[in-house]
Image (cartoon, rainbow, N blue to C red):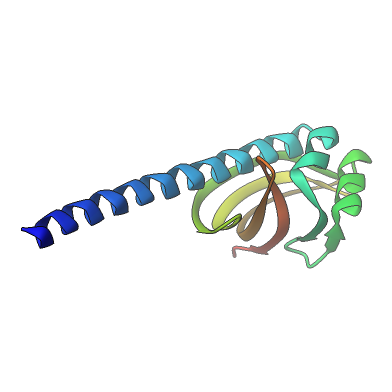
Length: 143
Protein backbone atom coordinates (compact mmCIF):
# COMPACT_ATOMS: atom_id res chain seq x y z
CA UNK A 1 0.00 0.00 0.00
CA UNK A 2 2.78 2.45 0.88
CA UNK A 3 4.49 1.61 -2.37
CA UNK A 4 1.30 2.45 -4.32
CA UNK A 5 0.90 5.76 -2.49
CA UNK A 6 4.55 6.61 -3.10
CA UNK A 7 4.19 5.81 -6.81
CA UNK A 8 1.06 7.95 -7.09
CA UNK A 9 2.81 10.90 -5.42
CA UNK A 10 5.87 10.44 -7.61
CA UNK A 11 3.71 10.23 -10.73
CA UNK A 12 1.93 13.47 -9.80
CA UNK A 13 5.23 15.21 -9.15
CA UNK A 14 6.64 14.08 -12.50
CA UNK A 15 3.52 15.27 -14.33
CA UNK A 16 3.74 18.68 -12.66
CA UNK A 17 7.42 18.90 -13.54
CA UNK A 18 6.69 18.05 -17.18
CA UNK A 19 3.96 20.70 -17.31
CA UNK A 20 6.33 23.31 -15.88
CA UNK A 21 9.02 22.35 -18.42
CA UNK A 22 6.50 22.66 -21.28
CA UNK A 23 5.45 26.13 -20.07
CA UNK A 24 9.07 27.26 -19.94
CA UNK A 25 9.75 25.85 -23.41
CA UNK A 26 6.66 27.66 -24.74
CA UNK A 27 7.88 30.91 -23.15
CA UNK A 28 11.26 30.54 -24.87
CA UNK A 29 9.61 29.94 -28.26
CA UNK A 30 7.28 32.91 -27.73
CA UNK A 31 10.28 35.07 -26.92
CA UNK A 32 12.06 33.82 -30.04
CA UNK A 33 9.01 34.68 -32.18
CA UNK A 34 9.02 38.21 -30.75
CA UNK A 35 12.73 38.49 -31.54
CA UNK A 36 12.11 37.37 -35.13
CA UNK A 37 9.33 40.00 -35.39
CA UNK A 38 11.63 42.71 -34.01
CA UNK A 39 14.24 41.74 -36.59
CA UNK A 40 11.74 42.03 -39.47
CA UNK A 41 10.63 45.45 -38.18
CA UNK A 42 14.26 46.54 -37.72
CA UNK A 43 13.27 47.39 -34.14
CA UNK A 44 16.75 47.77 -32.73
CA UNK A 45 15.42 49.35 -29.52
CA UNK A 46 13.59 46.12 -28.66
CA UNK A 47 16.43 43.97 -29.95
CA UNK A 48 18.89 45.78 -27.68
CA UNK A 49 17.12 44.28 -24.64
CA UNK A 50 16.55 40.89 -26.30
CA UNK A 51 20.21 40.33 -27.11
CA UNK A 52 22.81 39.54 -24.48
CA UNK A 53 25.68 42.01 -24.21
CA UNK A 54 28.07 39.12 -24.94
CA UNK A 55 26.10 37.85 -27.95
CA UNK A 56 27.88 35.83 -30.65
CA UNK A 57 25.77 35.71 -33.84
CA UNK A 58 27.11 33.40 -36.53
CA UNK A 59 25.28 33.75 -39.84
CA UNK A 60 24.93 30.94 -42.38
CA UNK A 61 27.62 32.61 -44.54
CA UNK A 62 30.05 32.37 -41.57
CA UNK A 63 29.90 36.11 -40.82
CA UNK A 64 30.32 36.44 -37.06
CA UNK A 65 28.90 39.45 -35.24
CA UNK A 66 28.75 40.69 -31.69
CA UNK A 67 25.70 42.48 -30.34
CA UNK A 68 26.57 45.98 -31.53
CA UNK A 69 27.71 44.73 -34.96
CA UNK A 70 24.41 42.91 -35.41
CA UNK A 71 22.35 45.92 -34.31
CA UNK A 72 24.37 48.23 -36.59
CA UNK A 73 23.85 45.95 -39.61
CA UNK A 74 20.08 46.02 -39.04
CA UNK A 75 19.88 49.75 -38.22
CA UNK A 76 21.95 50.74 -41.27
CA UNK A 77 19.84 48.50 -43.53
CA UNK A 78 22.96 46.66 -44.63
CA UNK A 79 20.91 43.63 -43.54
CA UNK A 80 17.12 43.71 -43.93
CA UNK A 81 14.99 40.83 -42.71
CA UNK A 82 11.74 40.75 -44.71
CA UNK A 83 10.39 37.63 -43.01
CA UNK A 84 11.48 34.94 -40.57
CA UNK A 85 9.11 31.99 -40.28
CA UNK A 86 10.05 29.22 -37.90
CA UNK A 87 9.09 25.85 -39.36
CA UNK A 88 9.86 23.69 -36.34
CA UNK A 89 11.86 23.87 -33.14
CA UNK A 90 12.73 21.86 -30.08
CA UNK A 91 13.75 23.31 -26.73
CA UNK A 92 16.05 21.82 -24.09
CA UNK A 93 16.15 23.53 -20.72
CA UNK A 94 19.06 23.63 -18.28
CA UNK A 95 18.19 25.89 -15.38
CA UNK A 96 18.27 29.47 -16.70
CA UNK A 97 19.63 28.35 -20.08
CA UNK A 98 17.59 27.15 -23.05
CA UNK A 99 18.94 25.60 -26.25
CA UNK A 100 16.67 25.75 -29.27
CA UNK A 101 17.32 23.68 -32.39
CA UNK A 102 15.07 24.34 -35.33
CA UNK A 103 14.52 25.38 -38.92
CA UNK A 104 13.49 28.82 -40.11
CA UNK A 105 12.67 30.23 -43.55
CA UNK A 106 14.27 33.65 -43.98
CA UNK A 107 13.82 36.25 -46.69
CA UNK A 108 15.73 39.48 -46.78
CA UNK A 109 18.25 41.74 -48.40
CA UNK A 110 21.99 41.67 -47.67
CA UNK A 111 24.00 44.54 -49.14
CA UNK A 112 21.27 45.24 -51.73
CA UNK A 113 21.01 41.56 -52.77
CA UNK A 114 17.79 39.64 -52.15
CA UNK A 115 18.06 36.29 -50.43
CA UNK A 116 15.64 33.54 -49.56
CA UNK A 117 16.83 30.52 -47.64
CA UNK A 118 15.96 27.86 -45.15
CA UNK A 119 18.23 27.57 -42.15
CA UNK A 120 18.95 24.91 -39.60
CA UNK A 121 19.79 26.80 -36.42
CA UNK A 122 20.89 26.56 -32.84
CA UNK A 123 19.97 29.40 -30.51
CA UNK A 124 21.08 29.62 -26.91
CA UNK A 125 19.03 31.76 -24.56
CA UNK A 126 19.76 32.76 -20.99
CA UNK A 127 17.20 34.04 -18.54
CA UNK A 128 18.34 37.30 -16.99
CA UNK A 129 15.97 38.45 -14.28
CA UNK A 130 12.50 37.81 -15.64
CA UNK A 131 13.47 38.01 -19.32
CA UNK A 132 15.19 35.77 -21.84
CA UNK A 133 18.10 37.03 -23.92
CA UNK A 134 19.77 35.55 -26.97
CA UNK A 135 23.30 34.55 -26.02
CA UNK A 136 24.38 32.67 -29.16
CA UNK A 137 23.02 32.00 -32.66
CA UNK A 138 24.50 29.76 -35.31
CA UNK A 139 22.80 28.81 -38.54
CA UNK A 140 23.52 26.60 -41.55
CA UNK A 141 21.91 26.80 -44.98
CA UNK A 142 19.70 23.83 -45.80
CA UNK A 143 20.50 22.77 -49.37
